[in-house]
Length: 241
Image (cartoon, rainbow, N blue to C red; front, side, top):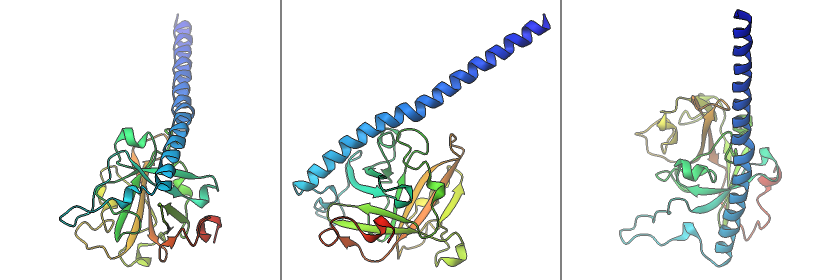
């Protein structure tokens, strides 16, 4: 009787294990395939808009002089990370709600825009839904993160991992609790500080297959923005320069 019960328990655990593996397979492969199709649509739409002179980032400011807000869910730029290979490119959407992140990396609406002083902050899934930040932990100091807008290339480079090496004590990579929202402040980790630099922050879940923590990468704008009229095929950093 006991042997039969143990055998039954073992079979149940095997079945549960198979179910878990099937779910993980769905989460990774199926949702990645769905996201790939959606990213293709978003890419085509954004480039067509650019070709007609319609730039989401070029909306006229409000009468009071404040910048116009991007509509939630709208694609407005591309992110490229050469470390992840020449084919790595994703449309960046406005917003970080789950429905936005299902389609691609999302921009924190209250953070800076590309090239602006402050912190251009984004969130993205680690596993599944396109897995845009799957290998974020593989980035190292000096690695390029390139943002493409309609007319401009912005090259950011990951900061060093020693706080003492940065004037504001910002490190290139860190692991934090999910509630550590200070990492996307204009000066990461210093909510009361006034920004003087153009930073970029990428956030994702950590470790893989878990949302227990967050993996954070901080980078800084490297030099002046590069006009696409001068660099139609991309900045030198795109090919390792």
